[in-house]
Length: 309
Image (tube, rainbow, N blue to C red):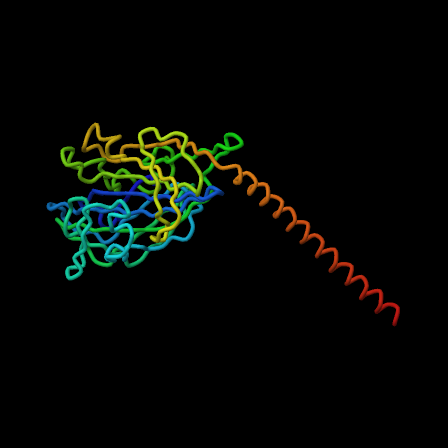
């Protein structure tokens, strides 16, 4: 779901790390993934320069609807800033326009512009921050986007989807083009093993009445959270505390993480699939019928004209 974070070439000397990162992923019946991504980053105290840009290489060439949702970080009523959204220890300082999150304080949320570039089999998102984050300061970004269907049908009622993180080895040509060796930003699996500060979590929200067949390394519960931050019907959600799974070495940067999720779909889903195929077929036939009708009308007009000549 993400291959790497990168610095801008003009800020290549900056010392920066991703200290906290989570993905909330909503899967729909047709396999499309809606992703709400937050990451908090820190510019080290001894960094020779500030940071104004951060780039993300997403391992999909067809991402859609990229939106900046960073302003929600300062919204007291936003679901994912509250306990109801399973977000603990989150506080907003409206006067300073900063937040406290997961034990980190004075984080500055702010995005000015997002630019999208297709590179090989992936997409590069360049985020320009609304203000520079200086040495010994922290910043936050929240993005929302969708990716095409990632579901693979394994049987009548079982689907699978792979969640891949930090697997740069799968994109060697793209990594060379991005000059990853000198620009990559480390993403720590965990910063403090005693307090479990930082690191990253992954949440996958399943469609209504779908069930997870395997939650290896994760836990299953229910949630009413919708991708727009509202509440709806309770759905199954699977959560991976990736920080605990890959925290063998707390300072290992960008450790690859993959989860192969199997889900069981209700019978109605298969009916919907067949219905959609029939609709597509009917639409195709309908277009063909319309075309024949237009041709017939044109022939009739031409024939009438000839008869009157």
